[in-house]
Image 1: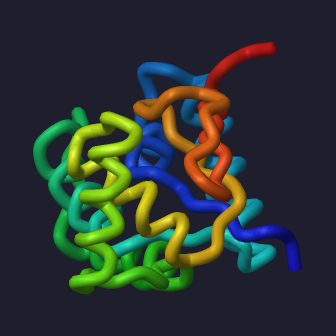
Image 2: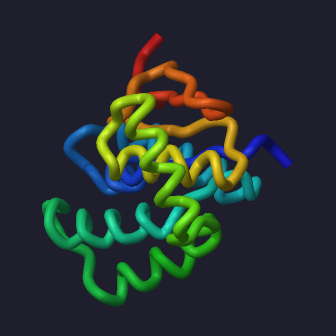
Length: 142
């Protein structure tokens, strides 16, 4: 199996964004690859944020049935990190040391807890390493 990778919410959101075809294709490819080879990881926070985005930001919001199917067929197979006291404490430490927002720090802490080597996100600092996790913006060309 490949090294574990953590996928941020924006990867899933772009998979449904028809306004930027290049990002949609890249996001869909990342999800498909890491779902099929079992290396893709997400946390409870990603699921919560995706549900919120699917209702509030999609041009054509998902129906309840579509959302349930996506959770069952895609997200549930990657969902490995749940809320815990240790995750919160880790996020606080990351926030203090690396100056990310608390919620971004929770995502980084979840990637670390899951043993991921890469965190794919458009919202974090591309190529920064936070302990053992390398942040990669998959939409950066070059």
